[in-house]
Length: 284
Image 1: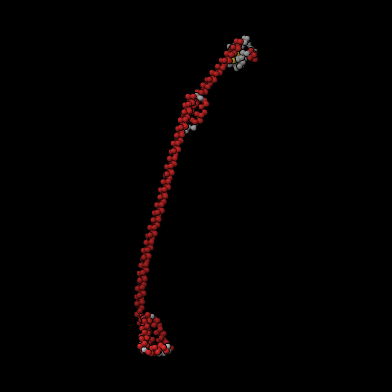
Image 2: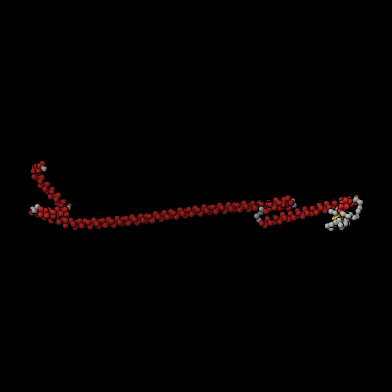
């Protein structure tokens, strides 16, 4: 402290400059914080009136109090104006921000709608492409199925025609050969023919051949039997000519013993009692 005091005493102007600096600092603080000065000056007035009465300092506090009131009243409109301006700017900023946000929101909404439309269109396009692909595959499968069916039908018709031709050839061969042993194989082939009319026609032809062959066989059998009978009659007649003639036999035993059986009606030795069935042949 002594050093500061000596430093100040060495140059009196220093004290003046310090006082001026303090005054300027007080003014600056008064302008910056007038409410603080107002409170402190009020406390100073009370203090120098009640606690430590001092008229000079009291008057100084009163002057400071008045100045503080003036500064406060002067700054209040400015603060109010600044506050109003700040509020206006805040409102404008908020409105601008709201407008920007609304615009951005609108843009985002529009962008979202467009994106949703694009996605929906892509989905519909994919579904359409998939449906077209499936339709093409189905059409291709149907075409292949039709081609396969037509091919199978042609092959079946070809096989049926070949079978029919084979049946006709066998029936014709049977008609020409008149061989009964070929009837069975011909019937087996003809029965496999799908054409009902053709099958019936060929079976009728086979039946006609069978009937004709049976008739010929029957005629041959009858002819053979007649030939056999004629031979037997000739042999019998020869035996009768060689054997002693006898016109009556008691029974067939005697006739057989005589070697004249069988005896036909009109021949010597024929009698009704020897021909039991009455067919004209005794002792058969």
